[in-house]
Image (cartoon, rainbow, N blue to C red; front, top):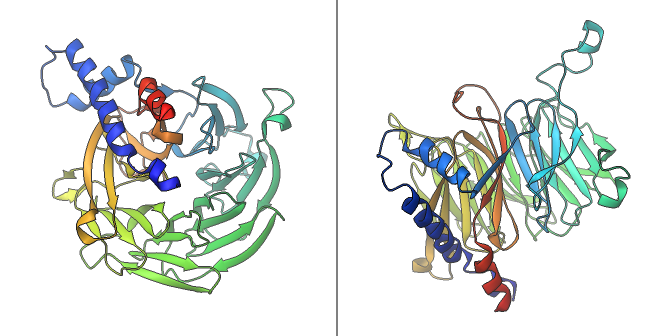
Length: 402
């Protein structure tokens, strides 16, 4: 029943975005096509209100997460801050972790500037806990329930800090509809926690190199990608795992996203976008240089987002566009594949994407630098938390009527 509902969001989103683009073009017919079209388009979309960029982080935002009802979003940044946003009102709700300040020499010992960088955030489906992963290899669990916050300015309460990893915590993921949390780190391990008891359960070993992404859906089978150029599906109950290799020509993956149980997407450093199913050793479908290339090297895909169980996926890089894909995950070979749907102009590195319910909107972390380093700074970009409208309100009204 769930799939029949969610199945074909992609076409509706495409129609909606196409409509917004038409309305924009009618306004700016005379704008000449130039090399900076992407930045000009980005400004137009912002002025038209389809994209809303909110200030809050001083340095590059590295990650975003949404509550399952889509009311609040969490974003983390390299300046150590974690901010909770009110998506409906499009404003900052409160700052959960404060940004880094230059301190005196004694205090400097406590947290160095780089170690406090927030690299990943996740939010449990019941909207109760937020998990924050940092470069100092800690995983902090905050209680962010609304009734818990007596004063609107007060921040979420720190419930527990897990300190098991030996490297930066690059990714966090809650299992859908549960309080099981998985954290992936540069130390090659994935750790499994249960937040009902607030305890660490086990470590999953297998990656030969740092883990760059972890994602989990309904099944107790998290999918991870790492710098060893493999993706792995962990069968927790059986204590085994499956290994997926992209082949000799494909670079390691930077991001992973489970579309629905047994199907997942990987976004690679060389701009390769792969669609996999857990029964097959090889990718079902792959697109090379999904975000164009610089010279002859594709731009890395830094973030992937999707509406779980639907055919809509969104990828982010630094080519000035969010790219939307229609993913077909059919029973037969000819019903499988990916096709480009639309693109939304957005300047800077897109480091995180989370899609809201019914694909009404998505929230993005966009900034000047890649979330894990500073090797390619984009000077013209701004460090912002973005809300991107994907479907018009009339479109969703029609959905509800059905």
